[in-house]
Amino acid sequence: MGKLTVEISDDVEKELRTFVALDGYRRGKLSKIVEESIRDYISKHKVKVEGDEIEFNLNDLEKDKFYLIDYDGEKYAIQVTSDNKIRLYEVLGVEDKTVEGRNNSGS
Figure (cartoon, rainbow, N blue to C red):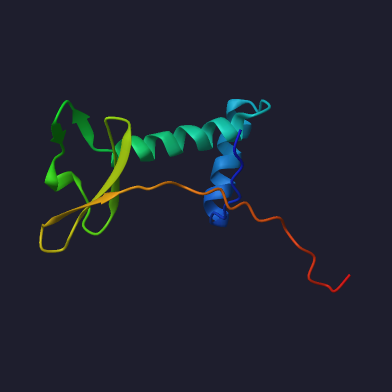
């Protein structure tokens, strides 16, 4: 299971914790909310591929953002440029670069 360390604004954190408290706090609740949000984000920014057809609505894609495509077991990214051209990139791989925290106090 992966771990992410993120920073969010104080007002979003307060609202989230209030919501979780009102809904009844249970172990893992925050993780489930964050995972669901990430899945929704990925789903929103993923382009549908069926067979040899790539389906997307150009109006739904924000310019200069990257969108992930999974085609035939390979991962690609597309980007819509400001002049409405589409760039296709092959995703070569993601390297896990977990960095352990350090104490910089010299001890």
